[in-house]
Image 1 (cartoon, rainbow over the protein chains, first blue to last red):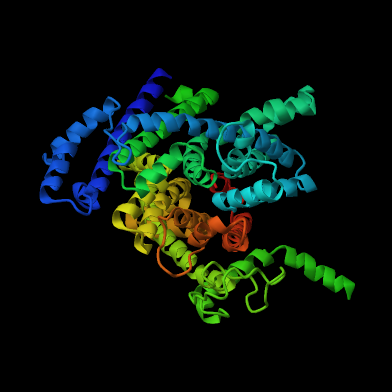
Image 2: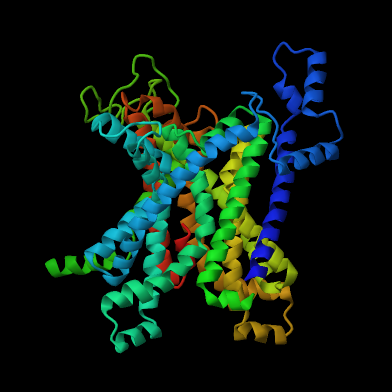
Length: 306
Length: 289
């Protein structure tokens, strides 16, 4: 188990390095960053000054070296727009997004697990059709559009919920729900099909013969085994969540990481872009490692193998 | 007569008639939409701004879904917008699918270090929110059709590669492959003539299920401003441009979004039906969305 964790961390670090190179190259490939940051009335001297300030006059590998050594210490320089250290902006925005994503995942799981289980248990009934319909819909509706429609309906028409900001639990409802729809739909379907297989298996039959109550069979034995594939998809869902967060935060004006990333890219704020993407990469890597460890912990077969 | 009708109805239930029809309409519009639209999609008119849909007060049958903030007919724009969505989907799925399938077959067939390396790369790709890179690409290189297709292809290949590889691994062990090898077939020949036909159905299901997802991602990118630019109607951009009018002219962002949702839903239903028909064991294809 120790070895597995160490190997995963090592792999992630390598991937992060590759990501940093990709970002480094991409940011510079679109055109000379110094030129892009030069105001309309800039002169040749201004251009040289900017170059010197950003360290862009040094050879490319030296630039990368400085970039990496600073990044490792958490220093991504200053944002071009706000002049604040990039790390500060990130430190402010990230917790807001984490709060949103965690709320979202909780809502998604609380709704999808019972739905998926019941759909499997009561296969081919109206509940099953309903669950599958809802899940199918959930995977087809564009998140940002649903968000806009929810705002129209709940804020403007019914006037029950606030449109933006994050000061009360009411503010969390719509964005968290929107963010969680896709994941909820996916988990419902996955859980349903896994449960159907598991419920047919030998050991469930054994449990029933032994006299375990139907409730125990379904919720204790079958569910535990069905959750495994759900966890294994965890990594993919994290990425989907981050993507969704960018959209949802944009629609609901949520002061989070996604919005920061969006405005950084739109405003071509290169230090901020570099910091944001590397942080996103790091966060996703960490989440993936946790998911993988959780999966290995839950599935003894993997533990024994490694 | 009733008996005949009931028999026909139950037979019909086996085929996904409604999703299939919608998908058919979508493809038809993608090819001919602009010609069939009641008004030129880009024709602006200062006098005809913000006309509501025909069933609301102030609406008119000439503009069934209303007009937008520049006086352009919504219905025509939606019909014409099908083309962009369709072509982006086709091109990126072709790109990602070809690369991914090819790599998946090679990876699964030959195995070894390349296999491990490729799968690790695929996993890393799947786990990273490519929307960030797609946006960056769009901003740095300028938003364009090519950039969107390339970004989407970069995400898609990984999914194909993983699933196809899985299928190849299981097909590889079958008897007829061993027999072909004994008979002296070259590796390439085995891959083409024996392995590929057996993974065709998986590929087809995967392709269908991907279309809906790609359309949504393209709409999302366009919504964020990193998608297809230009005066031509693009569903995602229509939603984002219509966003500020949602309280006054709700139909401007509503109908393009409905179009995206409807098309995606029907492609998903079609894909699900294909999966049921071709191989119900393909659980992995659906669970990850």
